[in-house]
Amino acid sequence: MVLYPTGGGTGLIGVWKAFNEMERMGWISAKRPRMVFVQAAGCCPIVTAFWTNKRFAEEHPNASTKASGLRVPKALGDFLILDAIRASDGTAVSVTDEEMFEITREVGAAEGLFFSPEGAACCAALKKLHASGWIRPEETSVIFNTAAGTKYIECFADFAL
Picture 1 (tube, helix red, strand yellow):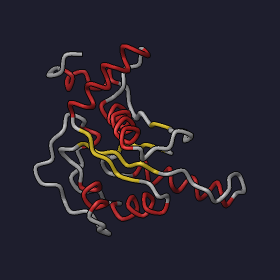
Picture 2 (spheres, one colour):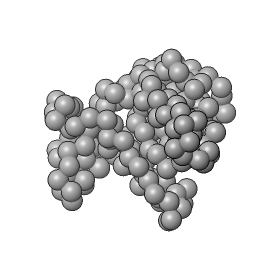
Picture 3 (cartoon, one colour):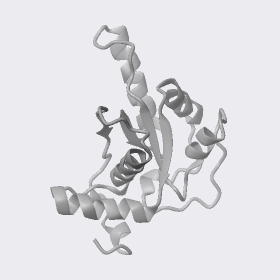
Picture 4 (cartoon, rainbow, N blue to C red):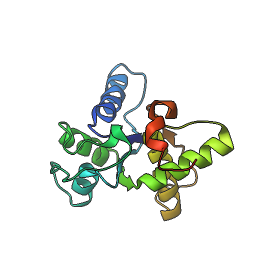
């Protein structure tokens, strides 16, 4: 399973395209990992479109999140993102800023890693999916941390790490 934090969706679209290209080259089989799309609760147009079974996402009004990489109220590739999630039997999850910053604190204390809010969003989504039973115990999960926390120092000011 692949958990990817996405605002505009180009990264997730690229990952999905890469799997298809690797299959055509004979490097991998047709089996794909389940794709998990992660957005901030304050800006989650793709999550809303996924759970309401829409082909296209509507613009998220008053988008708000400290994770600037997730603050994209209208993704240009919305239908491509939704296609990849559905084709892989994946899902879409939103997490709050508070959940992101709590994970940043936990991972930093336990592992010494300073996640970006976007990467932390994936960890928070992973916790939710484990708790709900959506992730099977034998599954391997890959989390994309698309930046370092040091890039976002100003957004941590409101959250005591």
